[in-house]
Image (spheres, rainbow, N blue to C red):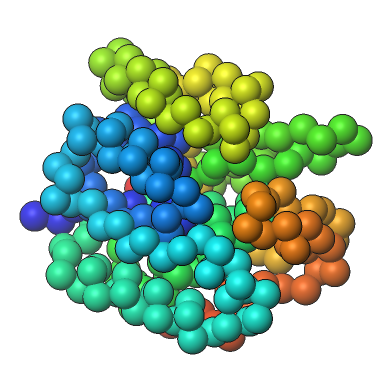
Amino acid sequence: MPRSVMIFSHPNHEVAILGSVRRLQPYLIFLTDGGAQERVEQSKESLKSVVSMADVAWLGVEEASLYEALLKSDVASFRALSGEVASILSGLDIDRVFCDSIEFYNPLHDVALPITLAALGRSAAPVFEVPLIHQRKADAEVYEVLRSPQSLWGDCINTKLTNEEHDVKRAAFNIYTSLAAQLGKDNVDLAVSRASEEQFLKARGKLPSPPSIRCCVTNGAARSFRTWGSSRKRSPMTTTMFRSSRPSPLNSW
């Protein structure tokens, strides 16, 4: 039977669409360890009551090693990772795929889509980006969570959760205690307030370039990425590293 697949750069990202995880019962793939075993354990604690843990793949790539690979333009490391994902996908009958959106907040979030497209090859399965967090255009440092920029809303699909799905998701936020440390209490509170509706962006056929002046907020393992995107240099992930011959992913739901 065809099924959905969800591919996340980090553990904990699944909480953004936990209602849909519960509803669709997808196969989940986590690319990295998230930089801390705590994040892995919190995801396991949350997911064990939502999906079959036999349908969760923890690839466990060290987060710091991927940041290092980005700094060195280490194409081979990312091709190997996409190959590992492709090996998993080859054994599944896929109807649609979800992955982290390109938002230029964290470079490892941004590589999820090109890795996914490369792993899918010529598969016609529709792909949807999951918005997590991006910096709004404003004088102050303000962030938008769990929603794509308004300029992309025409290609977004919003899904309302049932009361039961909403209650399960809100309760799950109490498990993800590391989120407050990563995102700040205000951003977590905003995410909780939006828990009843989940948004998906039809994956863009042409991967976007970074804004001309924008800093990527990253954690300690990637402080050297403070100026990510400031020179308008395209990430190698969006050019030669993952050229895909698959059809445009801008398909209907």
